[in-house]
Image (cartoon, rainbow, N blue to C red; front, side, top):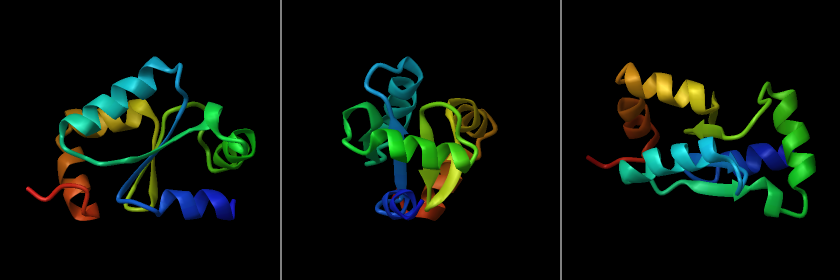
Length: 101
């Protein structure tokens, strides 16, 4: 769990992803399109990826992507897209220091 907390706070936006996940690609593309320089951890390419995935599951994350903004768990693709559609995502990214404009 400590490793997850450490990784989740290394940048303003952190995404736990899988290289073969289409929704992960969608969220990375959305955030990248805003100019966010997220730290992306591809769980299927990490030696401790399974352990990290189990720790994330204990936090309530059952699937990828798993997105942290400002060190706080936001959730998965549905939550991020809902924030975007509600026009809450950009202000959240600004408060976290992920966007400068």
